[in-house]
Amino acid sequence: MSFIPDFTIEKESGYNIIAGVDEAGRGPLCGPVIAAAVIFPSFDIDIPVIIKDSKQMSHKARLQAYDWITKNTIWAYAECSPKEIDEINILQASLLAMKRAIKKLTCKPEFCLIDGNKLPAEINGKAIVKGDSKSLSVAAASIIAKETRDNIMHELSKKYPEYEWDKNAGYPTVAHLQAIDKYGINELYRKTFKPIKERIKNEVKDN
Image 1 (tube, rainbow, N blue to C red):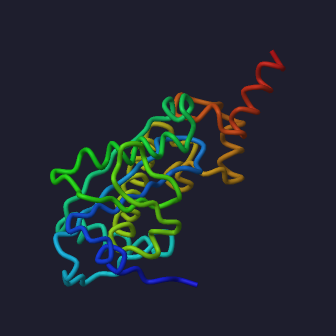
Image 2 (tube, rainbow, N blue to C red):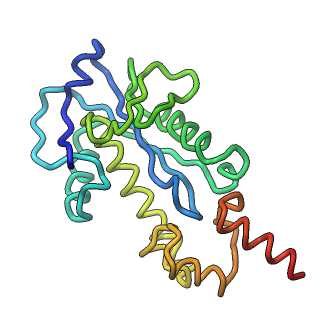
């Protein structure tokens, strides 16, 4: 069942300057985790494009929404590198990327709506499970985060075309795992993620 998000949560919060915050890239085996924060100028704004959970949208629809959001809202994104993910774990890296994105906004939000069940440290806000299907601000952030990360993986794929990150975005598809077995593990892989960790362990064992 697909939900159409709106500004109900924003309006009920009692705040006017609200940032919706979401991340993309918790599941992939490589590349950064990206977080985005979006502030709408008004909760009565006319939105001519579909904005909903980015995972429920086609690539074409996401691109149209991305174009509109980047032109009509205050937004920012930030990342945590694979090295940081390995050092502090993917949950903490996601929360840190969110905090960085919020800090990069040119307008300081009074309140933040965070997708998920945890708030980044020292952030005034509310965590909302499936927030990207309930809040328009969070849904917009999910689109910015998803498109930004996909673009980053496309660029990284030019350096390492053999892994086809432009197609799999770093997720553990069968073809991607086969490519890792064939070409090895480079600096962009998350060494603490199970499929990578196991391969490193086996390499050490074989040597």
